[in-house]
Image 1 (spheres, rainbow, N blue to C red):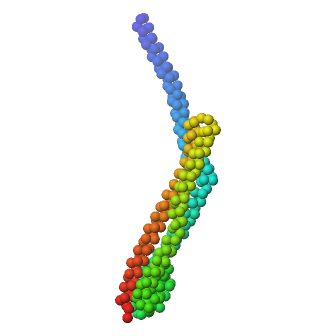
Image 2: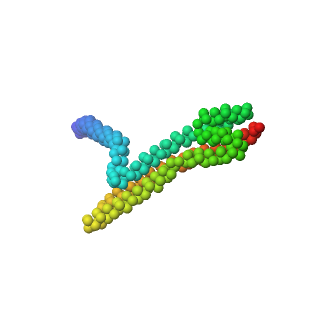
Image 3: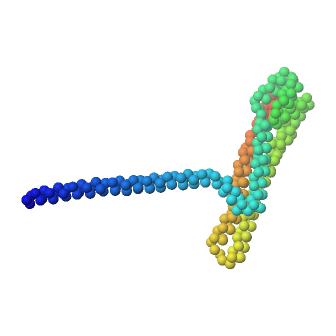
Length: 267
């Protein structure tokens, strides 16, 4: 009888444990499902937030630039912006002029030499007249005075070469002026902004970090903008100087070759 009771107790205990296990399994599954759903929601929310932040960052660049422009003070930022616009306009004009002034000196010298060898100086002058650039203009002046002697032709090359060099370097002084003015205006705006910040401190009667930091930040924006404008124009200015130097070197070398051609074919 005791054995029977023991067997029945074991069976009942086994059934209870099985029922408890089956009852706990759905509860855990539901909890895992809830956790997974919450995690997915957080991930989706983070993704949406990231995308919105990226969109806001892309769309707010010009707005931030406009805000900084206004914070720097329109009366001080506007002259610096004008310096940038005018400076870039002169740079573009000089780039176009110098590109048009560039000539294939080898091809030009070859055509001039062919006509000079035949004694056709008028044909050589026509070649120079139809070719664009200061080099062809210099050659034309030399050919136009070759009848007066080689010395006059050489003097014409030298004199007219100086004129062409001056034309190549024209308007460069305006770029250098804007390079000097832009940061100067920025510094001036900074000084005025600092004075205004100290006035605000005096009126407030307290040197609070908020008042000091805010005033200094606004004051320094003009200096930053002025330095950026000066750097941009300085790079363009150096490029133009290198281009002018290259053209002048070509003019000098080609003038020597041109005089050699006249000496060899002078009758």
